[in-house]
Length: 69
Image (cartoon, rainbow, N blue to C red; front, side):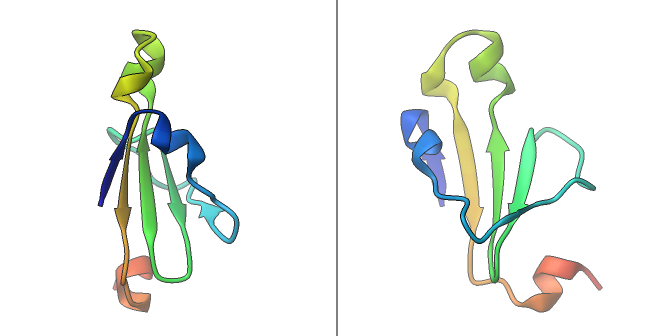
């Protein structure tokens, strides 16, 4: 699921933990029990355009999907 604009700021990260090992185009990744959330904020912040905020929510992941293998 893709979330954009100010709705990104309302995502509740309670129960999620930050994934510090991940680098790339995303700003941050957060891992939950069976899901991952990738945040893309750099362009929105750098250009002062909050409508460009973006988050991708990957749900329904099993342990392998969250831990690799």
